[in-house]
Length: 252
Length: 204
Image (cartoon, rainbow over all chains, first blue to last red; front, top):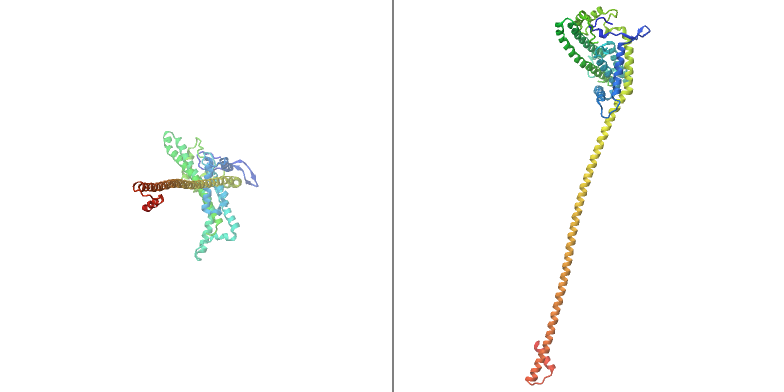
């Protein structure tokens, strides 16, 4: 697509692999779609494959699956209690999907699904829809008491409620932008340092020596990005758990 | 994506490299620059480009939806079942160990009791044997004593008999002697009965 190989934005380009047009909207199967498919397929495939033996004593792969499972289960139980455990499949899918999408993005030439705001925003909106939908379905109108904190003097209550509503509405934005911005920034930084290496090394002997520093930086940032990939998936899942807590226990 | 580097990249790499590295997600500079550089494509920052929003949403819904369905209906029950199974198995094993330990304790107690009983029995048997021996000894001794007493009495009787016999013989002898003396020496004719009564009178 892009003409410039060291352009750090080029990696985020979406291009259709199978063009599909329905009602004037572009529903093409793109490289992004391919990597979403890969993320879902790889995660589900790994979980299925690693547990094929159903070992009483888990092997390495089964341990990884079990650790992730229990890690997510503990995360959800701590945030939303046992009543929140009904959302476990949902939180587990969110966590694994985001984590695997982030990690797949770390491979050179691969597309990072979570570096697109529309993807993270859609995931965040799914979370918020579940919170609001389940909250109202379960508690009815009394769910809206989630915006009315207890023990606040009546004089400043309207003000506090307004703040609560604004904070609630900003949740999907902060949730999606946090993940999106982290992945985007990390990949751009990495690409910029990698670009320095290419640019400098084409300037002759001095340039090759000078390119050692950005190369080291690129290596270090790669390590950092693996940490960020995990951390952001974790943060996304933890916040999902905390928001789900509002759906289960609206009276705080 | 990261290192797709071709040879002819100097000018752009240098120019686009610096700006986003400082504030990558904060974008007016980046956006304008990319907008200027993008050729034949969409004049927007790709991660925010709305051209493929419908496609992204559709395919995210499809992939994530199917992924969620598979996880909820197949994989979570599967992993959960494995973990549950293990928990149950550990609980059962612990219970079995507890039961085995209890059985061992009971066996130990039974053994101790049996040992005590056996000791008591041995004690009783020894006591009985001792008593029996003593009783037998006593019986034997009393029998021997009785026998000895009998023989003593018998001997005493025999002595008394012999003594009385000797005495009777002495009477006859004394009568004979006295009759002979009276008849032959003193020449007094007396009847034997008179002499015998006189001897008996003297002896008294």
